[in-house]
Length: 359
Image 1: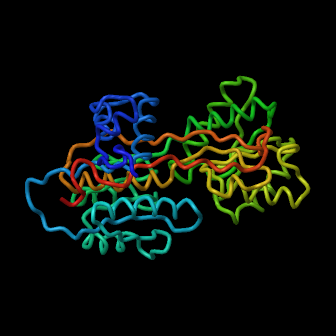
Image 2: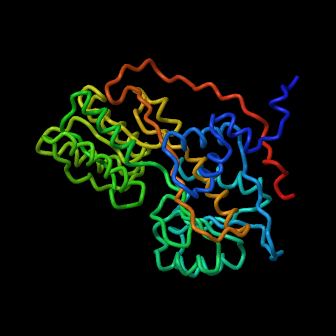
Image 3: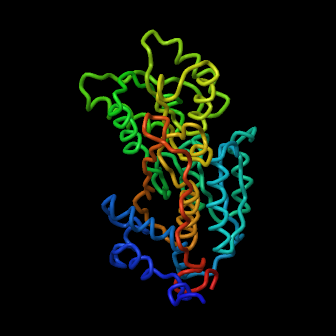
């Protein structure tokens, strides 16, 4: 028989109880109205995810005709990152009774024309690519509720971001703790908000060790196909490289496979780390040390923030920064006994907050 807790609807009070904070603190974190400490933010966001909490729909003073559709602009749908992101966004939009229109920026001959066409069919837009410039974003946001995802904030828009710099610095410091001294960053550092933050974290960790100097990154696109070119550059270096901080897991796993083919042992000869913690990372041999990024949560919060804008919130709020955490496996030199699957947390049935969504 289901417990009384499982039968209760999930409310802001439930989230506060799970996180061990007040309901006012939960409200501040979710609305971004005032800053909260990183630890408090992590506790609240973890409770929200465990409980599958969807904030209550705000009331509208005026009944405005709606398309009941959210727009999502992505650079593409390649790799596991974007499929997880889309899953989180689409499932949350569905809880609000919204369908989703996806625009792929890399496949559009003229992205601005594509956006003008889609704006006629959506109530709001999430933009998750730097292909759409800031001037275009400002123009769109003047007439359409807009949320920016994993890119630099722009005035007039909400922003949902991943914490990158701190975790990249922790990964770099961890490699230094293993005695690695010639560490390279692999991937475009200026290709996106995320990769820039990760490179900045890498540089800051090395600068704290005053005898070490951060070199330029290995400039390849952070995707599987870039592995051979990255390894060519790494093995051609004048000074032997002993560790890599890759911009994401997809690139890191490809690099590990290429190193193995060329007789380079990971981690004995060369330590490798990634960023994202995609599923394959735990099943490699050795497993990939990485930073765990809750990608579905990123899509989920983009849908929530967009819904708030559509429902009438016009004031700006602080960007929502979703925490990441380090996962240690064998590719950095840590002991590793093979993959271990996490036990799924006990979940409360998916329900709306105090009232059903769409009420």
